[in-house]
Each structure stands twice: as C-alpha cells, then as structure tokens.
Amino acid sequence: MVERGLHVCSSVIASQLDVHARYGGVVPELASREHLRAIVPVVRQALVDARTNYSELSAIAVTSGPGLVGSLLVGVTYAKALCLATGLPLIGVNHVEGHIHSVLIENHGVQFPALALVVSGGHTHLFSVEQLGSYKLLGKTRDDAAGEAYDKVAKLLGFGYPGGPVLDQLASFGNPDAVKFKPVRIRGSELDFSFSGLKTAVLRWTENSDIAAEIEGRKQNTNRSLEGWLRVTPQRTLDLIASFQKTVVEELLRRALLSADQIGAESILITGGVAANRGLRAAAAQTNGFQFYFPSNHLATDNAAMIAAAAFPKWERGDFAGFDLKPQAGLVLA
Ligand code: KG4
Ligand code: ZN
Image 1 (cartoon, helix red, strand yellow):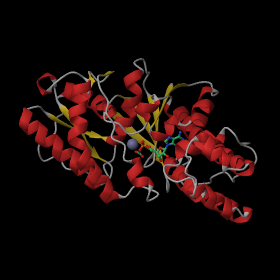
Image 2 (cartoon, rainbow, N blue to C red):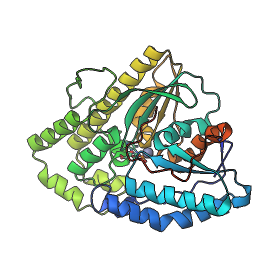
Image 3 (cartoon, helix red, strand yellow):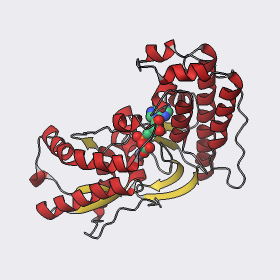
Image 4 (cartoon, rainbow, N blue to C red):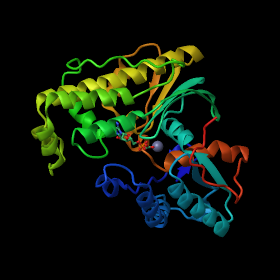
C-alpha cells in the first residue's frame, strides 16, 4: 500500500524463487499457480501491515503487462473482483513504469528530462523520461536481458537460479581484468544491447578451461552461503566472474551515458533487479556529470509498492481502467 505515490505504508512480497530454483528458471505454469496461491494472503497482509482497510483506499492498481500472461491474469482478475466488491476504481499499470517509479518513491527531487535504464531478468531498456508519464524507448536488448545473462552464466557455471546475486557477491573476490571479452558490436542503433555473445564467450571459456568436475561440485553444493560458494569456486573462476560482471556493467553504463547525453538528461535512473548489483552501483558512483538514482534493494526487485506508486499520477488524472482491462504479455511502455 502506497500513499500519494511517495510513502510506502506496506510492501509484502511472496517470493517464488524456491519453487523455480529446482528447474533452473521460471516455469510459467508454476508461476501462475503460485500467484493464485499467494494473492489473497498477500493482499490481506498488506492491509494489516498498513493498519488500514478497503474503506480508506482510493483505488486498486494492478500490473496489466508485460509479463507471463497466466500470472498477469491472476492479478488482473483479482483486482477487478476487489473493485467490484468495494466500488474502488481500477488502475492498470505497466510493470516497466512501475520499475521507474520504484526510484521516485525514495527520491523526490529527480530532475527531468531523465534517462531511465530498466535492467532486470526480462528487460534491458533505455527510456527517455521527458516528465512523469511521458516515456520514449531509446534502446533495448536484441537478445538476452542483463539479468537473464547473469542467470544463464550462473547456471552454466553450476550456481543455480537466480544467478545475479551470487555472481555479484563473488565478483568482488576476482580480478576483473583477468579475462578479456570482445566488446559487443551491434549493427543499427548504438543504444541497443546484446548479451548473448558474452554468454557464449563464457561457455567457450568453461569448455577450454576443463572445469566440468568443478561445475559438478557446485551443482552438488548445499551450503549456498557466500562462504559455501567460495569453498567450491577456485580463483580462476572468481576471476572469470569478476571479468563477466565488469563487461556487463561497462555495456550498461556506456549506453546509458550515451543516451543521457543525447537527450540532455541530468538524472539517470537505474532500476529493476540488476540495479541491486554492487558493481553497477560502484561504477555509477565513480561517473561524473550525472546524478544517478537507484532504488533500495527491496524496491529494485519486483514488488507491488512500485505499481501502486506508478498508479498515483494516473489516479490524479482520473486515468482509470474499465472491467474490460486485459493482461497484455507484450505491453509496451510509450
Ligand atoms: O526485476 P526483477 O526482480 O524481475 C524481473 O522483472 O525480471 O529482476 C530479477 C533479475 C534476475 O535475473 C536476477 O538474477 C537479477 O535480477 N539480479 C541481479 C542482482 N540481483 C538480482 N543481477 C545482478 N546483480 C545482482 N545483485
Ligand atoms: Zn520486474
């Protein structure tokens, strides 16, 4: 529950990571089933935590896309039912717009135009944000999202899913200049990203390094703490991880800075699950000329507070959805 787009009264997250971890990635059918299981208790808990009830709310916001259609359907259907029962207006929110608002919840003085880099397991998108509610897509990944690249590299190295947080932690123990990856070249827009070549380069490195037994050892590892991972990860693999992280961070920042220059932005908002990355935050902190904004870690990964925050300007404009609101897996932010 969020007040006036700025104050988080409660934020309840039902993580499904354990369910999907066994399969090495998100299984769509399991995701919708878990949403169905969690949605009623999560909403109830959000009201309890905020010490409120439906009579004190002004509207109910829901993600209408983009995303997995089964999961979106659970949210949209439940939100409609709540609106019918309570008489509250319904607001449909784009998940990506929610990520952008996650930064604005905690930072009230952001200057526009701003450049937003939304970087998660499903997105690596650059947007020009002229002002709130006015977005222009400047560039995006041609293949894997950055978070997806982290997850795939972690999986092929035997770390399991999701890989971002583990690789990020381990990267600080390696030499980022040990493995040189070729710079990514993309035909066409210089603001588009590509991470699949980097993932393939890591795969080649593992093949050439003869580390099948080491990878198998990690797959069997049950101590998933930092110490546990360090025990089964030799220095040369830590060096590879640090070099991978350095390359991803450089790619992300290079294009973010280029596009911020092009649109005359003063602020750069970095958001989405990968915004929690310590290497990315450290590199941004060393970059002059722009004011960088990141959400706190609990607002960087998927959460409902960012959706409620993004709904507030729509509520002010009376931009409500009808009961014909449909989930849109490929909803585009524009
Ligand atoms: O935004 P999010 O919670 O869900 C999506 O909309 O995808 O992002 C999850 C993604 C995963 O791919 C995860 O590996 C990545 O964000 N991630 C990270 C870190 N924390 C989460 N990637 C790199 N470094 C991190 N610290
Ligand atoms: Zn997300």
